[in-house]
Length: 449
Image (cartoon, rainbow, N blue to C red):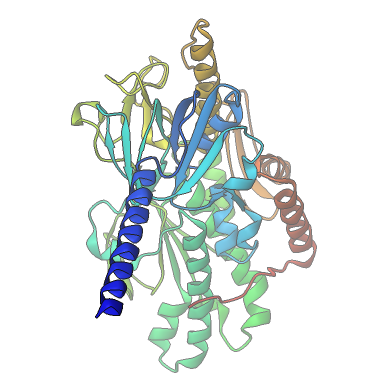
């Protein structure tokens, strides 16, 4: 009997220890295990271009920085299409967030999804717990916008992350493998055709890369397939490709793509997609693969009042990046709408803008802590560019517009320089040189669960 009582007491004591430990963990999760100190805490949501360049600019002596992202890596979105078309491996354009910011004196990274902002309590709630802040920076970027088309959202493939780009690569390669195995010519046509929705830079670059894949890779890898039956379609709702760029760039990019065999359809609306047929207002296209690059919407965080959201969902900010009505909350990049005379509809949702705004806010917060005079944000448009394929690109600079091989080399240099980390630059450059001279794509590997 006494032994049983002793066992009960031990069990009860163990249970109490477990409960105490659990309660301790829960208390730690109030700040995600990040210890408070004398420094003001800046919580940044999003490890994209804006978030990273903000942290690089911040003074490490004055702020505690907590970065929250659902991924543990930064991905270089302008080159995702090369991962999708077997030109680069995923780790060539991805970089660990902990590594890139390891030199910061008081830096903390937590992998999690932001769920809600409690703006009047200075608290951010995530799927891993909540955290208090002195300043909150929303740099969550944009997400794919399907414009309410449920079937398109269900069956089409987006390309906003490394995982999505790898999934697209798998699907393209698997479709070709499956086309070899079917005797149904209609099904084979569906498997070999690719339809790209959206004639912006991503759509144009992806179409060009797929056209080169068809020309140089398919005859070697799939000699049993009639590559002439494989078609690449680029569908754009507006009258011209590359709407943000010049008419010159738009016309030249279309000319390049059509010479490469891409079927370009402008002023065409995609109405539905059932996984086998893409329905447009100008006819149906047999294809089991629709790649959606046709639109984005801000990836906001619930909790802010509707009054601070502009049409389309971007967060209204003043000239310093502060969310309207909240001194301690800022927004950057694709999710933000900086109001100014020059940009009444907000700045373009481009990587260059996100980088520029991140650097600006870093300097702003440094000056704010030192009590120095604050400067409003102003954006200088450095231009835009897009590549169409080997020795083919279009570049729009403020005072100079050019196309062709020289534009292509400029595009290569800008994107190579913009990659984070020496290894990523070296690996990407090596791949590009090899691909250029061999006309090959070395990452034609299907990796799936």
